[in-house]
Image: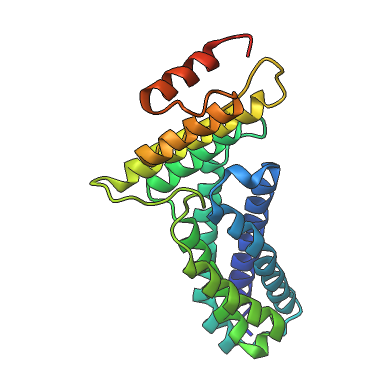
Amino acid sequence: MSGAEAALVLGLISASISTIDAAKKVYDAVHDAAGLPRAFREMAVRMPLVLAILRKAERQLKNGKVEESMLRAIHPLVEHCKLKSDKLSTLLREALAGEDASRFERYQKAIRTIGKGGRVRELMVGILTDIQLLAENRSMGAATEDQFEQLLHAIEDIKKHDPSFPDDIQYHQSERPDDQWYVSAAKTQLALDYAYRRNDANNCSVFWIRGDSEDVFMGSYGDIAKEANLPETLTGDDKLRAVRKWIECQNN
């Protein structure tokens, strides 16, 4: 086994482990993941599997159990894995705001980065595919049968999902769908963040008015009218005015 080749491959694997482990710690530092796109949460779930296989491969190399022909075969795989890991780590550091940031600030930062070309799922699928090919070299002994099956399932599962946008944002046709996504996400997260912060205030109530359509909009006002015990006979503009007047009254 070539010492230089082994050292190079070992260095790439060790660097990938350090990079992915650091990226996982950056994610873990954001205690509330609910405000982040689903792709970030999916990525965090897959990272331990990737790290486990890379660490096993690292041990095999350190113990001198990998033939030179195998080293030549896995060299490009671990090199590609390292490059993708670096990109993913950079994306995470740019996207995830500090520990004290609000959920809206974290989401705004993350989605802006993705909008500029960051592709969390694509990078994660690429890393998982590299690891899958590494695990397919049975003589390397880097993965168990169960881990190999987990890899296949993870790749298949991630590919089923749409790009990294929140679960509750629905797509509507638009000349600039990206803008619609950003605006919808920003308004939704801003409202949720405000509601969360004001939830325990005795002198404050938060009402959710949906604007999907005129019927849905009027239905939301109707729900408030019921909560306020306003006359059921109110309709149309009369109901809107009555609800607004009730909300504006500080004694309610």
